Amino acid sequence: MKIVFQGERGAYSELAAKEYFSNSNRFVAVPEFSDVYDAVHDGKAKYGILPIENSLAGSIHQNYDILLKGDAIIVGEIYLKVSHYLIANEGVTSKKIRRVYSHPQAIAQCKNYLTRFKDTEHIPVSNTASAVKKIKKEKMMDAAAIASMQAAIDFNMRVLGRRIEDLDNNQTRFIILGNKPKRLSAKEQDIKTSIVFSLKNIPGALFKALSVFALRDIDLYKIESRPVYGKNFEYLFYLDFAGNIDNDIPEKAINHLREITTFDRILGSYHVGKVVHPIYQKR
Image (cartoon, rainbow, N blue to C red; front, top):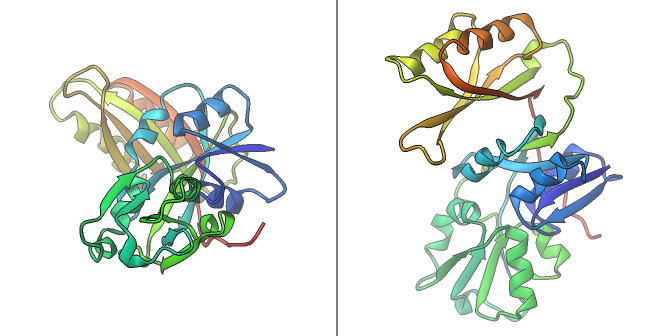
């Protein structure tokens, strides 16, 4: 199978994809997060993987917005234990560093560590592994990148700092995109459903929306609000809850919810993800 991820070899998305799928599949890097969605939606790839939130830095909002581009759905998730490394070209020392490149989320996850570098510019790039590729390609001798150990191995770079994230329990949740739902087990507690909706402008609308789940003892994992593009101070609500949308009780909850929504979409039902630790290797 062809599976797409954003970035370069050694990106955390690639590590998560290889933990979720077997190594016998074909993993293909694309430049942007939206390219991942488009490849799946257009049938150019069987599956895609997107980071959606981090336990330290929070949600990756642009990827919530991407979920509304078309008809691709969430078919799985995985939680990757993330360890960051400070990576540079051979000959570069910590005292020489004046610029640090990485994805904004990675920079945010290492902000305490980075305070030791005085008068250093933090430069955001689209992907952690892309940061390593950039400083190597341009032979930067006053710069470093924050990325995975796999990126350091793949680009044959020097590691100046190990496990530099602010907290040890640093995890990123990735969602798996596909065009067809996977067959799910009968265990309701092992299944999660993601939906997105907007509400009518009525008093207590959000309370009423959440009540349709509380009345049926349905556990909520997360709720995230995002502004509606082009409409001032109107919001979409992304909600994850326990259960399979094809089962009776969750289906009734959604039908109840639709009494007060102006828009809703089921983003997918899938097995609750497990926490995995990446395996680094030469390749």
